[in-house]
Length: 397
Image (cartoon, rainbow, N blue to C red; front, side, top):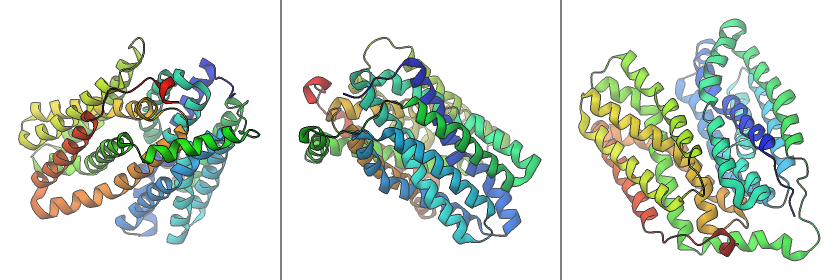
């Protein structure tokens, strides 16, 4: 049987999400501009690196989840931090696009090995039915990644340049994240011996592909990723088009992070088992409502603020929902592989979202883009609302 995981270890794993997301994702938003200025590359060429990483992370997510299901979580997450450190170093010394793309291919693998899906799989394997509250802790601290690492990376760039800033981020992963992953997940042992323990996870996730619930969850979370990826890159231009000042637009966008954290804290304060069915129905409806509010708001700052509030709070909670809904509807056996397959589709949707949103905008402006996202969100909501009440996790394996 897998060893359990104490509260201190759970909080440490949560803090490691902050380090991983901060250095492998949010730092990019700060480093892209100084790279563009120094190297003279086009912005799309630089942004392509992040899209490449998201695609690689999506492709690898099911395999990473399966490895964690088999008891290799300690090795996988430690290796992810080490790989990320090496790729950050490669990024820092390169002056040609192949270096950047090679580094971000590796960083995509590091993302798959250290981000939420891997963390959720590790917690579920070690804690079983006790994982939901640990997942909430993980997403709570992970939600501070941008808040901490965007200004930290900016400070490093200002004081030592973008190349040395990357070396500092590499050192954080090499000397802090990797050793802590190794220490915290001590006792994680691979399933060896009995054939049923080795093959049960494979049978579980193969069975999930034949379940309607799996495809409904894929639809729900895939459409959510499409909306998230689109709004992340298009909210500021949308606000400017509506006549809002740059400072107001930035303030509204900056509010999304604290609102996400507020939503997660609200769930943390909830006592007892989280009702994933009610939570999912509420959040999917909130996303559609937020998109429709943005669609009709025009330049009305109060309607826009209400839409951002709904979106921010719901977006914070949906990460937790994904962690608990997979276990509730599909069972904990083979959780990592199941969650990884859903995460893979999410990754593709996230990578394509800015491009798809841009196409909609070019065809009919932000009104068409928001209409398209609202229709997609409604499809995701209908998919989740069509799910029956989940059986107990024990009954589902």
